Image (tube, rainbow, N blue to C red; front, side):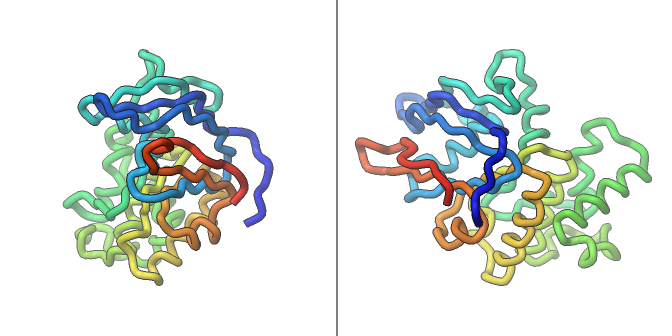
Length: 240
């Protein structure tokens, strides 16, 4: 994809992450443009997923993790003491490597977030479910079985359900941590096509081991390294 110059949605300034005494990320500074797919690439163990989790403070949930530096979302620091991490994760949703639908119906998987936000009107909830599932290209497959068990869907459909679950919270940014690595080639193609559709509205940041995938879908790429001197360092960040 040819890169398009867009304003920065997320900025990091000298971002450093520690797990106890281990220095996992070293002085990472980058501007991530809005409504662009940014791919984070590099060998296993170089800090790709750690960097992804920095953007919505998921590392806060790991004992011994400590962050230094700045992360700005729309110009606002997300690491201030008074930052509401729950609200941040609503704005910066995440889709994990393996599909992780809750042990509940398809409908209830979508509704868990909106209900926790205090939405109780059944018509409004159904509208959210339909909108989110349509955005995730899953509505036509499940519209007649919304009360069916989510775990009975194929792995590819489960991952699209997890994307729909994130979309139900109306995020600004979607993080995807190797979200195609557990899928077959056909399902991977469907998720990639979905990314290319969603990026028209959302900022998407993906971690991927597939250079081919980064080439197919991303406009920007961040390359990280693993050798002893450079582990956790952003080596290059440029148009894909």
